[in-house]
Length: 617
Image (cartoon, rainbow, N blue to C red; front, side):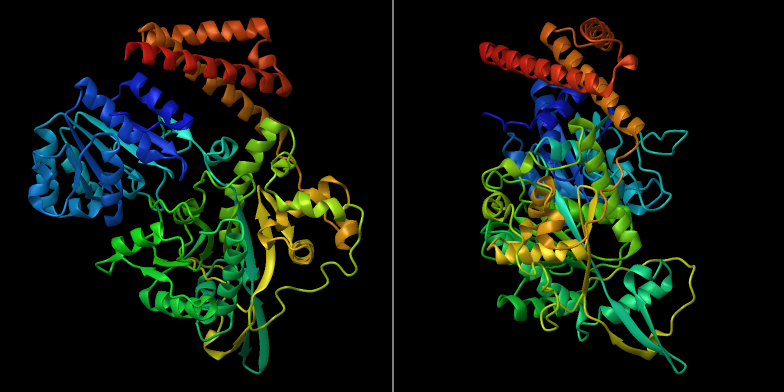
């Protein structure tokens, strides 16, 4: 049967895995890049070659069992999601899919170990960072995997939030970071069109309380990271306060605007408890007129509900209690609300990963929108993600504007600017679209453990203020409310979906009329990243492409050994030095030219490889 075609990044990971031939191998692919497809292509190929005859997959959640089994069928692999103990050794199947929690119990680990060790088995650990060497899941899964022929580990975030080490991984002695065999990060994925860009909207709010006889006002963005922040969220997260309902109203407005372009776009709200999820569900039903889908691992039909939401584009909102943190493929999710107290970069990145999956029907510029509270720790997480993308884009493009992106014919900003270019609308942006207290009165929540500020007596709370738009972050560039809100109003006045606000602002800025059209003072552009960082990224990219081209050439000659690959790398580097100059002496512009040259060479080699494959068949 014809196997599914792999994306370039998946093919690159596949090629490197087959070339390395290591027993344990770790791939870091950013959420949305397609770890599942890559791993199953490896499993199918090893089975075809006779290296293995069974496949065992371990996943962090129940819904992923069915998802892996369904995708595996497309690769000619029949995997059974483990429900009964006999499923581990069911001879009618090519292997099984089990959860890490099933390994925490002694019987599950022993049954899996027997099935794995008595066959030539490739073991795939999905989101391996869930395992800690001395944690229950880790201990059981390590036992189950003993005797495996191959161990393939997958993750989008190769670190843990505690100090436990990830099994089978090696760590850099200087940095303490996990050594990966293959890395494909978010910046590459967006540049390659594999992942969608995310625009973060942060909202602030004020809490007024009485201390002795004095009324005190505190805000989210100034609340630090101590326990008082958690207490503040206890107050503002109260569904009876105006804050949360107002934020959800704003999120629903964004979703409706996005559905003008993408008719089945969906939204996701993540929270921490069933009680809160149900309260959020009632608020969303009042706002949207449609009850949302609420999924939690406590419900027996959670997997079925999630699958139904994935397929039914008429359903607008999904509310989840951590269950949709990772590994779930719902490409139509385009608006998110982070209403969780979890503050770790691991969890935050996995949440953001739910919105980066691209779809053929969505052209350039169809960004996802994620609403977060204006809390320093969350805004830092968002900035880290966006800065990575901005640095990568600037390193390759030499600038930080998005002008090429807005040449796409589907971008309404271009149409709007045909008549707006030299026109200053009267009082443009003067109206505050968030001023309606009935519609915009809320924000998310987040908690943090730590210390540093005195505990605030929130038991004497007077009231929680309405949600206030604070900042929009896209590709590492922040736009304050003073600029964003007038731009959003201009979108409304022009009949454009407000989800195109940042695009419109980019067009106005590129034409030099942003301040004139909006009638506001525009802050200076953020400083570029250090030149040394940009140049190092270019050098790393050249090194990566040289290695990839050498592997492809080695495979073509049938001499795919470490020694021959090294020889081909030296030959390629010598040719580059002759054609251009020694890499250490290359300017940034020359490095970009080398990258273009290598990319073209790789495409030609890939085309030749496809022709050879057809001839063999």
